[in-house]
Image 1 (cartoon, helix red, strand yellow):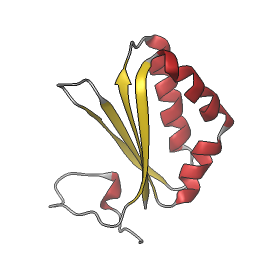
Image 2 (cartoon, rainbow, N blue to C red):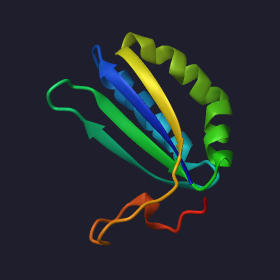
Image 3 (cartoon, rainbow, N blue to C red):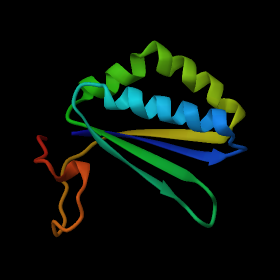
Length: 109
């Protein structure tokens, strides 16, 4: 299992940003092996992180190579005060089973 975390600081959002964000999320959902996503916001700094999960690198690479996604990335600079992306291999996930999460499926390392 793999994840890609998109971390960013807000400059100024408008309706166009939210439409673009939804487009990217929809593109991710259409990729091979997409499992789900989480979004977090640090209340103190306003920093936001969205974590996308895939069964394998295939779906993540499919999103990264998507022409629409590549064009969308360029237009985000007007709305962001910087970003950072972390691509990770998920080795283990665990919990008490109460919280439903995309990574609750068995992890193939």
